[in-house]
Amino acid sequence: MKTDLCVNGKCENTEGSWRCVCDNHIYTHLQNTSDGDIQRYRCEGDYQYIGQLKLFTSIEENVDNTFWRKYLNNKITPLFSKRNREKINQNDGIPPMSDIFWKLDFLNSTKGSPHMFTILYVLHIGESVSTTWVNKFQDKVINESQNTKLGTVIVTIDKSTIIDESIFNLCNIDNKTQCDTETTSCEVHNGSYACPCKNGFSRQFNNPYQCQDINECQWKNMTDLCQRGQCINTEGSWDCICRNQKYSERYNKSLGVEMKRMRCEGEYQYIGNVSLKQGYNNTRSHVELELSNLFLKAPKSVNCSINDAAGEETAALYDIFKKLDIIEIANNENGNQDVLYVLHLGESVSIKCLNEKQQAIFTGNIGFVNASIVSGM
Ligand SMILES: [Ca+2]
Image (tube, rainbow, N blue to C red; front, side, top):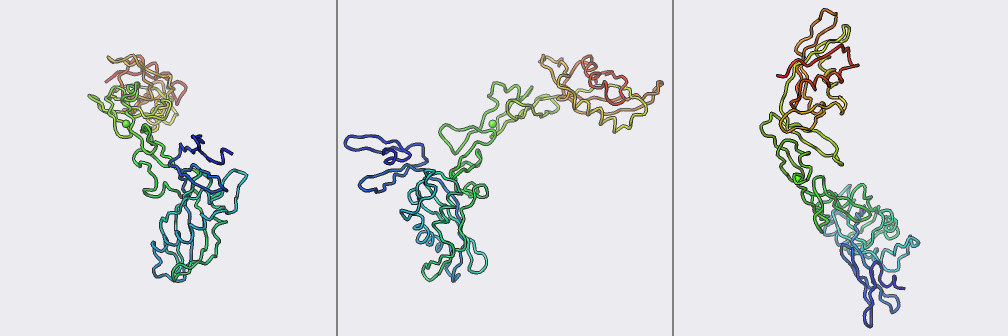
């Protein structure tokens, strides 16, 4: 059968023979297995799983990383690569481990209580399978409590595990992946890893390991990102420089994705007054808080036309509201209390508009009787 001759690859006929072409793999490995007189090839990737062995040794002298490397090469690797091992999950189409096993790479060793060691290794497999499956297969290959002798040291396996990817994986080990740490994050799934771009970066052509900065300032809607200022591109982000303005204000609005936007603003002050019914909690700090909250929570529809040279756009009051300072609270002849305050806004708006909008915001709230903006400053 054709698929048996060229597993995971494309079988191409040639004059007098045929060949197996592999693509879409990190790298390919042509495995030549003998099945009678027929040669078979298999296209493979490099899928990596982190294994852990807990071991006892008869002595502790000279049991170092060199010793463990040798132990993995001489005693453990042959267990995985031994041919004709019993197939498991055969119905799922997963081939025997010996067909897809590449190699074991030593990672590190740690010494626990006397005569006890833990070694970590990377198991390279040619196909993507779940860690559960690799664990199951390792259980069949490695017999716990099994003694082996390496040199003068007797090694007893206490426990073998394939570590669950969600707990510890290649991304957690320095230099084990090619993901660029500045521009990408690292994710693993069933033995392979990917390097998705961090926010503010986009995929570089043909490079799965690195991303490049997005120049947000070149976007068509840059004027939305940095209103009335100069957009400056930065690595992974951007900034907005305001000229001839007292300060800039950041605020978030949805541009399809969660995105910061900035607006250069000045400081414009208006004096207003509001009458509140007696009996209301008219302490200075309470009134200041209540009135400020009304501006901050003003409906989006409550906009004011901006009457500067640039402007036909409208600003929502909650966007340009800075703060409200109480000047004084005094009793009036109607038995109510007059509150005089300064309203600080980031944009210049007409007093007429502000009066209308403020009326809409206050009506039906706190002990409101009436209000007006007296003047701009
Ligand atoms: Ca940028």
